[in-house]
Length: 480
Image 1 (cartoon, rainbow, N blue to C red):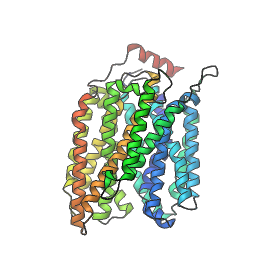
Image 2: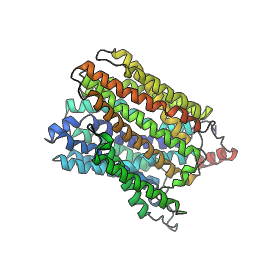
Image 3: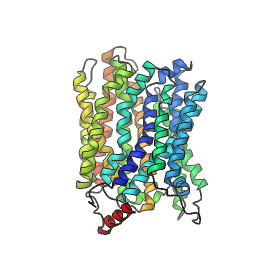
Image 4: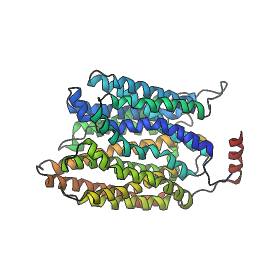
């Protein structure tokens, strides 16, 4: 077998997992463009409807740390099918919700299932790849992340234009059903042997870590108004969350085995540097995804569908970048790819820092296309680097750490840029004045992205060559 080719079994597994993961990714982006419509349809204030997204995100952070333990108890295939079933149940219940409170509760069910699925997807593919072609495998794993920004807002806009809001959730059903059927066919049955000792749940770690993440995300979601991060309703949960996460770190370091997430992995420079870059990448990706549609809607007067269509070039660029970014990461190493990617993300955001109410849409869409290409590479290189040199059993914890870093970066990016935007547009009453406020926020996005460029030097410089017997083992496994 050619060691530079991805095993066909890995491709089958990847397609299987992507189908199910698309339900999670589309659901997040579809709902984000529909909050105003949901507030009107359910006769609830926007401050309440915001919990449709916030409750989902809190549930995601509560269950992400459980993915490794749950996989060790159930096996990857059974956990994936169970999580898909949970997401399907949450989707159907959300579509049948009778008021805002019930919708928020059912979105929590969705978020709990989605939080298990995303790190599990990375774990299963990286374990199947056995450390080879990490860049190409990462290019596969991040396909749903690229398709979400392309199709999610457009799909959400079309659904709201043509059908009832309940179809925002009914649309998940085919992805879940087909994804579960494919998983039963294509994923290996990796349940632990009956006589194997069952992994015990780290209950103390669960309470500390999940509560800490939930408090951090809740605090970040409450950032608004002139007080910003100094507001007590923000500062108290953020401080409490940091204390709980710090308490978990101290607890985990005292345990030789059985910690919910192995924080000792941060001793690997690749894991520590990758997580930092993914945090910054999350700020750049999710923060800008909040700014861009708002600019097109508030300054240019577009509706949700129009804003979604204008964002397509960024998603197309991110999708097209995956093959080249993965190949170059395997050939040159993640360091050089990440440096170039983050530098181009910052450079392609600069045109938005100069926006006015009449800036050419062609220019902005060209900048979005370049930015999408760079963002695709900026996610693949550090995500792939996180797994360099890890043992098979360390991969689940690395998947959890990198997923949490990216998601926390997203929550932080949205909170920081929202405060900056509010300060910049608070007294604006004309499109040009609004554009000036958006320009200031985009300058901050450029700066936060540029910080990542020198940090890329901490990533591994060259890919680790596969051991000669690894290829033989893989070929034997493929034939078995």
